[in-house]
Amino acid sequence: MEETETLSRDYKIYSTARSWGKEYLDTALNRTMDVSSREISQVVEAIRDEIQRPFTVALIGETGTGKTSLLNSLFDLDYPISDNRPCTEDPNIFDKRIGDGTLRFIDLPGYGEISDIDSSRMKMWNEYLQSADIIVMTTYSISRSIDKDLGWIREIYSGDFPKNMIIAATHSDRLMVRDGWMISLSGETVITQPSMTIKKLIQRKKKFFKERITDFSNTSIPVVFCSSKSGYGLLNLTKEIHQRIPSESRLAFGTILTDTDKIGVVPRSKAPEFVSSLYLNKSEGKIIFDSTKFK
Image 1: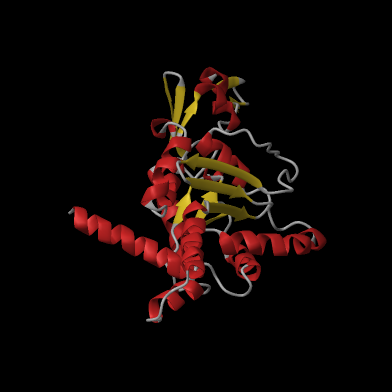
Image 2 (image 1 turned 60 degrees about the vertical axis):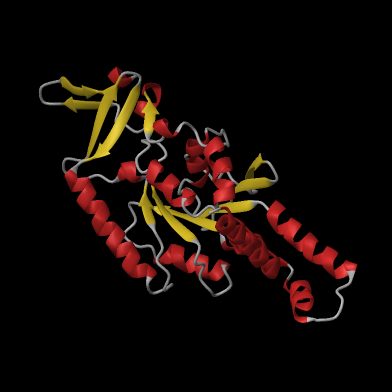
């Protein structure tokens, strides 16, 4: 077992060196003559640079789709958000260092503003996405089309399409159908669960999104419906990110998450943010439901 683990570790180091120091490594492996100390140092430096390079998760999406809110909800952060104007003008970068490694989350400014602003950010978006290990693209869950977002990503990614992407369909609490959401008060927390009607709607929308994705990529891209306000789906999004992170970086991911038992569970005081405040029977002049009872 120990020998197998050692071989596995050595192979990872070898793969890393080939990726980041291919020119020097190929020279060293293919030559039978003596390898200079300078070349050895360059290989070692290439390995060290890759090991120390932050494992990066980049969040991108149309302005207002909730990239910053997702980051705040998952990691208990306090980046500014607004319900009436764009807030993220420069990338928000959140690092967590564990030992020699760093896990980095980058919240990028949104696209879909005036053309001059979008054009000025294209180079910045491209550089961040090209260097990201995981890309989380946010889109509105209530949207009936995802083509515009996928088109943006392809344009930003220089005509190609990333294979390392997760799609987060945000604002799922705004999906409204008959039976709707089941909201329960439990002590000091509010738990939101979808009714069967909502579940079926989400499944239909997921199927449609995935059908449209096939026109842009032959890679299977997961789609997660979620809501930063109600907490719905955040645990599933966390799992999708977690399983794509190398084992050596998972410890860092775990330490920066809010308590996993609390992911998707909203404090009672925040319930009025997503629960309609008052339902009235106007003809009878009676209050049918008052969400202040959730406070």
